[in-house]
Length: 454
Image 1 (cartoon, one colour):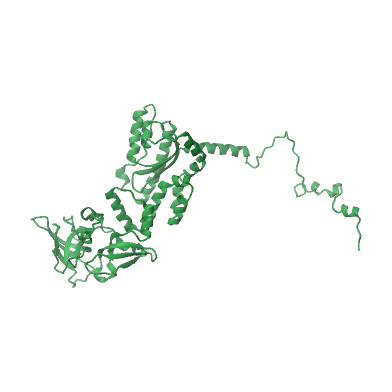
Image 2 (cartoon, helix red, strand yellow):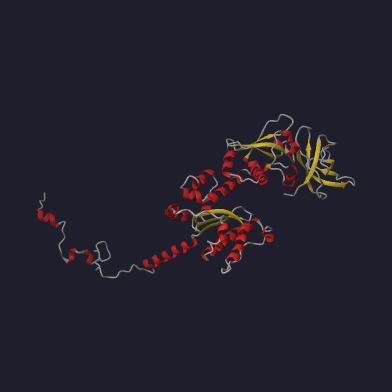
């Protein structure tokens, strides 16, 4: 065994102070390199290979200054596709921390006229609106592009108005609806929330929600959050609830939109989504090819429809004089469901919900004779039983003979989906006066309406 003295043991851990025992002299860039000592009066620059910390800090200051310049106008977005209304969100303008509202093209034009009349010393640029006569003839893709382009141009236009010092004018305050300026206490509270509000007022919330298609995700990101996010995303949230409702239940959406337009009442689409998904919403809709039976081919029948979430199906309870079992229509076959046709809504008024089923719009008869051409598609009101509502039966015009007396005409219709030997292939009806008549093939018929190829 080898015994080591304390001195020998220490010599193994403490290197000698000779040139051979200092490896950093031979390897100045290795791990043995000592930390350089820099005097306190030496000027240090961190610029390496084109990077300069001072330049980056200066760039950050310029960026923050530019962000502060555009922070006044936080959001100008199109409220609905194809409309002339815009959602406007402002922050730190006219003494207000955050302001949001929906304004139409007419409101913008009125504000510009008032600004020119009130502030003659200022030069107000023209509004960046497109000509309506050419705007509505664009394809949906180009239309959507021009709407986004218009909203961006409006944001820049509002920024120029605010930078010109016109935000305190009566015309601008009238455009905002003459809001009340908060007190100093509330302003101080708003200043504390200013960083989050400025960040959330950037036009990214709408872009984020566009990627979400589940109600739970939209609810979490826009409602179950801080008050700042909830307030700043209120308008965007409502638009996307409407979008999700329209995409999931197109026929329900058309029916509810028609009722809202007639009653002139706004729809809470989030509440309507919950109401429909739980099966509590009912609507009278029309079903193509009832129960997929051959006898109902190329027809559309009225039914009271609800949504059944557990099966992801529409439940259609047909309105009939006879007892009929309900039909479940899968969500993949929602193309079989429609609301009352546009050309018949003004005459039949489907938005009215009478207390008795016998007073539904499907029992009313269309009067008048549309301009028809030979071979054009039409839908005839026809029913087999007297107590049942009318259904729509598709056929084509073979001949039309207008009568010299009254407002009636004799129409010869062909039903090409029936063979030529069938008694259902050809039918002669008298229409135009809004009266119900018996058919030669049985049942009763009402009026007609022209249809398009789509």
